[in-house]
Image (cartoon, rainbow, N blue to C red; front, top):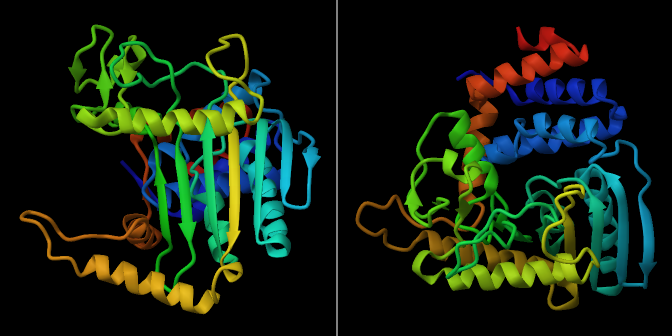
Length: 349
């Protein structure tokens, strides 16, 4: 499994997307955020997704260069139609606008619909945290095929329905909670398949309703389990709220339309810290709180307590130095796709 420097991976992703018909600026943005996910250790949302995005471009499920359209707005709210553009492009622009509105009105929110996959959720609330604000985003997969079995059931009815909140601080790495409401993100099964590895018990239920460690069981009729194990009703409850914010509130609806495009519906919110207390004081206290958690006496066998986002920050530091590990199968598929599209295959040498 080769370890590839981040800049080179971005060039590869950008080159492939341009060859697939993407405008250069959009290709740069998508490749940038994919590789950022790799750096943070979220390989399920990293460079391997370029393969999926090119396939969706071929099927018109992603429309490069699509218009970004405001359907409805007020001074503090916005409804955005992405017209099937890259989710990264659509949602980044929506978050920038929401941050601008929060600067003026202290609290702002937006819904976004009809767009492609938006990648790692942390991308967007981190923009707000860098601006001295608290950022929140939730997302669902519209009415595309579902992967998650609600607690107590055996039939897939929900998406992985992730949520993310990022908070400004003085920490070296950002405090950012980025989580699926399923036991695991769907992409982590793809990573296990690419690495020919087993998965932990509690991630997937097979088609017969039994726990399994075989990642192939998901595609063979199984489903992801909700977050919480024996208390999976908590993960299911969170997923239901995300579905309402991102499916019902956006107008996408719920359930499955197998003839339709994959669609990420999003709800974004930004809170201007200065509207509640001085930002410097807030950042200092968040930092103290994180250190307070770090100082917890470790449990037996534990390396200690980390604040949300600290694992990703440590991984980013290590991978920035040593490169991003890319599965041999993913590397081979990317090289093959580059050759097929006529993009620069020398980047693989």
